[in-house]
Length: 94
Figure (spheres, helix red, strand yellow):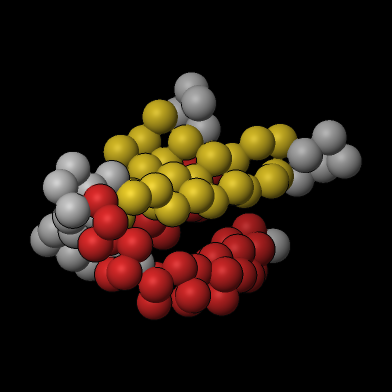
């Protein structure tokens, strides 16, 4: 699951984005725009398979408050986009 997630996140088409991968921590970070950082952590599920946790972080150095306004759409769309990503990963790995 981790390697498939890395491939998917690394394919994000944006000149303003940077992807960082920490294999030891099983963490993928997508840094983009002036305020956004998406963090995925993949852990092993004791029942088998993997759990994927996703967090959106406001990393704005200046105008941290403005990012909250800018982020509304991103935050509203995040659950649906995460589920679509999870479904694509499940399909790829089956």
